[in-house]
Amino acid sequence: MLQRREFMKVLSAAGLGGTLLPGVLWAQSQGKTSISKEMIDNAARIAGVAIPDEYKEMMLENLNDSEKGYDQIFQLHMANSVEPALLFAPLTSGVQFETQKLPMRMSAAPAIAAAKKTEELAFATVRELAELVRTRKVSSSSLTEMYLERLKRYDAQLKFVVTLTEQRAIAQAREADREIAAGKYRGPLHGLPWGAKDLLAVKGYPTTWGAGGFEKQVIDEDATVVQRLDQAGAILVAKLTLGALANGDHWFGGITRNPWNPKQGSSGSSAGPASATAAGCVAFSIGSETLGSISSPATRCGCTGLRPTFGFVPRTGAMALSWSMDKLGPICRSAEDCALVLDAICGPDGKDRTVERRAKFNWNAELDWRKLRVGFLKKDFEPSPETQQPEAEEKPAATPEEQKKREEAKQRHDARRVRAAYDRKFNDMALEKLSAMGVKLVPVEMPKFPYDPVVKMLEAEAAAAFDELTHTGRDKLLTEQGNDDWPNVFRCARFFPAVEYIQASRARRLAMDAVGKLFADFDVIVAPTFSQQLVITNLTGHPALILPNGLRGADAPPPASLADGNDDNVLGPGTPVSLTFLGNLYGEAKLLSLARAYQEATGFHKLYPKLAPTSRTTELSFTAFRPQRTA
Picture 1: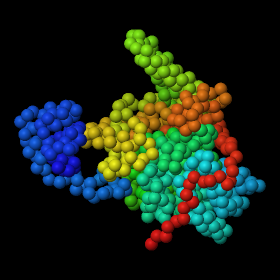
Picture 2 (picture 1 turned 120 degrees about the vertical axis):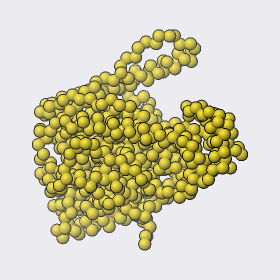
Picture 3 (picture 1 turned 135 degrees about the vertical axis):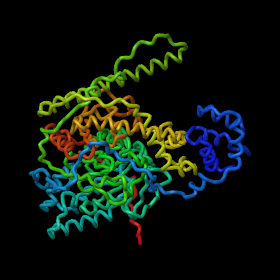
């Protein structure tokens, strides 16, 4: 019987490789000794192409006598780290960015005294902790021990740790204390404990990608971001959870929880970094975003999350999901914290070829944000048609079952509308506060394009990144197996025609040009976090900063479900809301400057959850892993 990939090669040679036909025809041929005209007819009907009878004869001859092709490529068993021979660059004509590196200018040293108990510093900002460590009021070792103890104490409740890097951390902290005592201070991250999303490789420790079947995977290298934070003197204390293969907050060890309401998931896929940061269990963390994986958990957990410009932070040593959309970024407590971390991790490493070599990040806490050009997505702040009252049904329900479905749909719609109306007041107050600060907000609108269909590029790239998982049937080991989960998405992506992938890429280029023209007139654009901009800017590569924007009150509409861990158990009283600031390509410095001013004016970033007391002897849900020796 023909191997699947040689079969595909023949169809491609016949000019039909860019349609649905190859995959459908192959599926129909399984268990058969040869391809038939009937199979071609059925597959062509699904693919939407017409094939005259005289061509079918030629096809049959080729299909049944083909040479090996695709299968030879599959037999290479390419690692996830092997990238395509194609590069995505977000730059459009006219984009300007800083190309000269300048000395970093932090905010003035905060007047903060060493706490009587080190744990009182659990929710301090990076800027505050940096000053205490620099002046030796607090040691790196004491901070590291405090954060390790908190990780152990709260993990059973929040499930945010995959692996503790305790031995590595203690050794690093001791070395940091020795260096600082000797006057060798490396900068604001020196001696500060942090956590890594477990898609970043760390030599000698498992890198599980949060997925069943990868629990014992060890990648014998340190990701570039890990190396750079080591060089900055930061202390890696834990590898934190992510939803399986960077999807959601469900991983092979359970569900990572929201510290503000542990009955809720923390969202994902940077579930652990956001939860641990919000819970005061690390000074900062590193997450990643392809399509909302920093934005969503930062919102749910009330963190400040920065999704940098595509191609600003090298992804070497990080799991690849979509080569043209993956981005690494910090999850912190304040905008300036994000700036200090970004300064340490951005720039080319000579390996990730998507990184823009010319772009420089220059943080200046005293930048005059009042001179920035600021827009806001006016229509996105207004009620959407989805949240408005629907029109009455014209025809009566045909059956009682249909009537019941309509009533349930209406109830869900009404509940969404009520929750959206409640949350909208936070956005309105944010615009009012910005205006009161003296920011002139100019109404703008994102260009209209079919953005959602272009997201199919992500699904196709992800299916290629995990091609062997699907082929071998190991996808059944993944925790989640629903309609929107990776196993099903990967299978469906195989029917995304090659020609349509290229067409989507061309449409993406048009969208990038149009959005680029919009940003040419603005330094920052203010937006609701979960409006269409989330899809748009992830496709165009523009940076976004997600800011805490207050807490829902006791009068907030309850979640759709109160069931523990249920996907509908979200929002509700006492949970955080967020706001998003969008920036120009490589314009993070201006973006963060305005965000810092907003945070100084509101103080929302200083709010933190009151975690329930837990027993320190509770059985831990993570592995206190002993590093392997490597050559």
